[in-house]
Length: 320
Image (tube, rainbow, N blue to C red; front, side):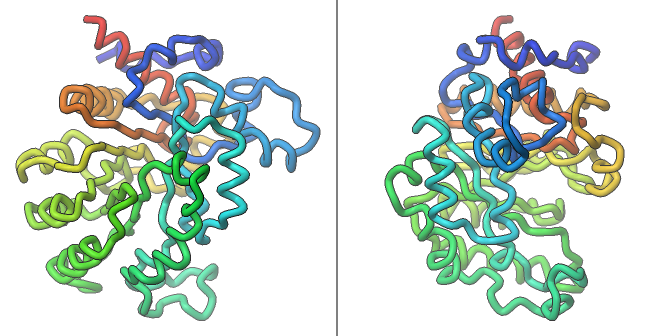
């Protein structure tokens, strides 16, 4: 598996091999405005950090490898139409961003964390509130120039104990919520309890036209085992796949952050993760589905180089 550890160089970021990726494959990163990427992804000069933050998405989206990006910030606050219009003006219509959905809709109980203030430790009355989703989230995507650039919306559910909520109750409430979703968007569910990957879970997704977000994260089972669980349950019937590469297995987000900052190079290439993503991309092509894959810096140390490395592996594999 040594070839799977080969990592792309900064020069590979800007070559034109990305043009040869099948148009149904959307590869990218989780957010984009990292100073550690200057000289690797970003070649332009920016007058200030403010200008870099405001305009760098346009340079990022001009790179042929990158056809998507995951907007993580929408997990913490609902999107504003003005923000989405700004992003839309920086990318071509074929660029499809992935949006994380506001955590107020996906948190059953607020964690005991200072950023939640008085809500910390409290039950969330808006858990799986579809009206709140429509009013505060989906409404921001309503105009055509935003809508045509909008890819999947991801509902991220933090791992939880069955003492907090029985898994059967969670799946029942999730199924009811998914059935109420407006059908003019693409949705994915990201669960981080492997115990939830049951036939009942995949049935709830398929009945609502929603897909599972394969996630490479700390205590989750590997991607290929998530794919096996989906296949054993009869497969996913939505017309797209999505995967998010977050942290090495067995490594917390905080530890990965400490190990990999300032995110200017790949420090720990992950052969199994890369092989699993190539397998998912090949499966997408074989079943005429689109595939969205985004990587976080915490996956290997530098997500642009991770994604280009995986893309080159896919192209090499396809040529065999």
